[in-house]
Length: 455
Image: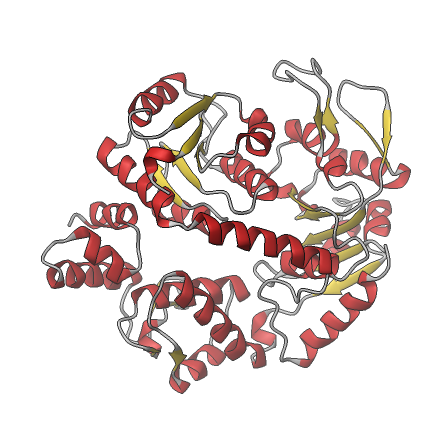
C-alpha cells in the first residue's frame, strides 16, 4: 500500500502533538484521525480499519515509564493482531525501543521528531508490508485458535522435564480447572497459558491476557471489571472489563503475585461468586470464563509472610504447573536456538541458516539468567548483526558475570554494533537505505543508532 492511500490514527494526550502530526501527515495520507483519550482505542480499532496507528507511550502527567503505552499496545494487538503500531514518546531510549518492538510494535519514534524522519518511518511501516499476507496471517491465527491444536508459540520440549509439564498441561486443558503457572521470568508462562487455551474446549473463544504487574491500583477495577458512563471523570461511555471480554473463553492473569492485599480481596470475590460488577453500577454480570494465572514469585512463602491471601491461592491453584528454568534443561537449548534462527532469519530476510557446534556448546554452558526470553533476544541480535551464514561463538552476545553483554571474544555489545554500522556505511558509501537493508534494520532504526553513536 502507498502512504497516499493510508488511513492513520494518532493517539496522544498532548493536543499540540496531535495538531502538529495531523498537519504534517494530512498532506501525505488519505485519512488522518486524532484522539486524545486512549479509552476510545478499542472502539476506534474495532471500527476504524486503520492501516497504521501512532500511539503515545505516556498518558499520565509526570509518568515516563511507558507502561500505559505498552498496555494500550496490547489492547490494540488483542483486537487486531495484524495492526501496525508506531510508538511515540519524549522519554525513549534504545532499551524501551527494543521492549516496544518485542511487544509487537512496528517501530518507535521520539518526540520532538524531525518531519523527514517521521515520514520515512511511517512510509516504511505502511509501504513495507503486504496487506494480503497480513490478512492471511491474521485469518490463519484465528483458524489455529478454532482448531485448538496449535503447539503454542515457541514451546520447544526435548527435555523430559518439559515433556512432563506439557503432558500435564494438555490433560488439564480438557477440564475447566483453574491453573497456576509458576516459573522465573522468561521461562514461557504466557506461551504455556496459550497452549492450555488452544487445547481446551474454549479454543475458539477469546484468550485475554492481563499483566497485573502493569496495572495501578486506580485502574485495576475499571480494567478488569469495567465501568459505566459517569462512574468517574473520564468515564464517557460504558466499557466492559477484561473478564467480560473473555466471555466463553480464557482469561490469563499474569504476575498475580504483584497484587496488593486489597486488590486480592476484590479479585477473590469475583472468582468465588463468578460474577462481576462494573464500577459505578450495582448490577452483577454472570461470568463464564476459564481462569489461568502465573507468577515468578515464591507464592507459598508470600502466604506464610501474609502478603498473599491463602484463600485466593486455594482458588487459583487447583492445578500447579512449574516451568523449569532453561539452565535446568540444556537439552532444549539447541532446538530453541534453531527455532528462533529460522523465525528471525525469515523476519529480517537474513541469509543466516545454521549454528556452529562450538556456539551450541557455549550456549549449553551458559547459565541463561533471562531464560528463553534471553536466548530469543540473543539469537535475534545475532541474526541481525551476523555477516555469515553460520552463527559462530562471537556472534552471540551473552552477559558476563558482571552483567555486561559480551561475546566469546570479550567485545562490548555497543562497540560491536557501532563497528558493524561503520562497516556497512563504508561499504555502501554512506547510502542509508542500502546500509539499513544490509543490517536488517529500518531506515529510522539505523538513524537512531547513528545518532546514539555520534556517526
